[in-house]
Amino acid sequence: MTATEQQAEGRARKPEPFAAPKGIPEYLPPESAGFSHVRDTLAGAAARAGYGHIELPVFEDTGLFARGVGESTDVVSKEMYTFADRGGRSVTLRPEGTAGVVRSVIEHNLDKQGLPVKLRYAGPFFRYERPQAGRYRQLQQVGVEAIGIDDPALDAEVIAIADEGFRALGLTGYRLELTSLGDAACRPRYRELLQEYLAGLDLDEPTRERAAINPLRVLDDKRPEVRAAMADAPLLMDHLSAEAAEHHAAVLTHLDDLGVAYTPNPRMVRGLDYYTKTTFEFVHDGLGAQSGIGGGGRYDGLMGTLGGPDLSGVGFGIGVDRTLLACGVEGVQPWSVARAEVFGVPLGEDARRRLVVIAARLRAQGVRVDLSYGNRGLKGAMKSADRSGARFALVLGARDLESGTIGLKDLVSGDQQDVPLDGVIDAVVTAVAAEVG
Ligand code: HAM
Image 1 (cartoon, rainbow, N blue to C red):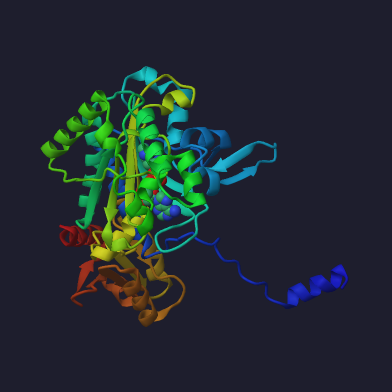
Image 2 (cartoon, helix red, strand yellow):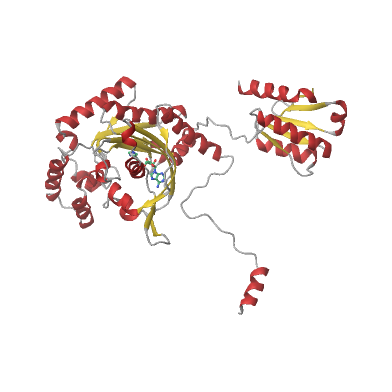
């Protein structure tokens, strides 16, 4: 076929529509109202504790994640979206936020401006995982990082912020699992102990290989035969250094003071290598296999590993997608899906000109207003009003214009009153405020 023939055929045939990449949830109205509410509520809890907003690059030097998150982790070895840019540099779509925050703190010397450096972030992260319910290739997190002070009260603060965020959404069906992964003083010795224990087991080859890279990973192997074999494995919690044990006890005391309940999980293993001391996960049992709605912990070596000063850090990342799913499972919906509070229905051109202005004035007063466009007729326009979720409709026709009034209809009760056109802004603002109040 010649190029001209191909073009002609292309014109005749409608092109196939595109689909979004696999494993990426899209949030469309009206459900997207829930997504933004969850994200903003979680970020709000962090803002109230003095965490400043940081907007990070969506992609970074690949080496940052390889070194920061750990080459042996699944996240780095199997799940990264890595590509060469047009200048031949290897870059990676961020799989998580901590490495980027630490890089930024070092690069901009934020630690010289008073400690701790407290930052919060929200946005998409990318992991090439096998998509399933609650596990996506583009996932959304709200995260915080507090860098530069090794104070157990800060660990407790970070945990309490996440807990407060979940509570503010009305969630109750989650629990906080907590452990300590020790420090540089006790981890190497414990690793040896665990390796000795593992050497005495009859493990299959892949598990043996995993154990050689990171023996801790075998602790959370879900297979019953491995679980049984690991029942008597030594646990790091029983081999903590005096300092790590003291730190952990202090974190627990603060959580008790705060009334934040926790479940010790000495077998917790996180998918990222930088954790030390306090390590935690928020788990929601209503979500099936992907039950982790948030996780985090302390990472006392990361600043140093990434070439910065030897400063400690602690933080969390909460999965916005999964938290939204948890709201669905618990049937909590503390947000409104209404796009507008007031919907304008003009009947005729003169009425439209007038309503366009009324809508603009109301919006300037903070009222959410939408209008019917095109010549829809009263019935079609009222249908749009209902669909918008608005509580009130403003109906304006030629006869109203003559009498200097406008119809204000309560779409829930069906009551309609005529209000003077020159007092419509006040009347609507009052009606909407009464509704909200
Ligand atoms: P993470 O546990 O890898 O930690 O991820 C945090 C949360 O992101 C998870 O608990 C989960 O809710 C959500 N998440 C992770 N992967 C997916 C996915 N494929 N689909 C949907 N949701 C997902 C971190 O990323 C650390 N940077 C957290 C942190 C901050 N630690 C210290 N500071």
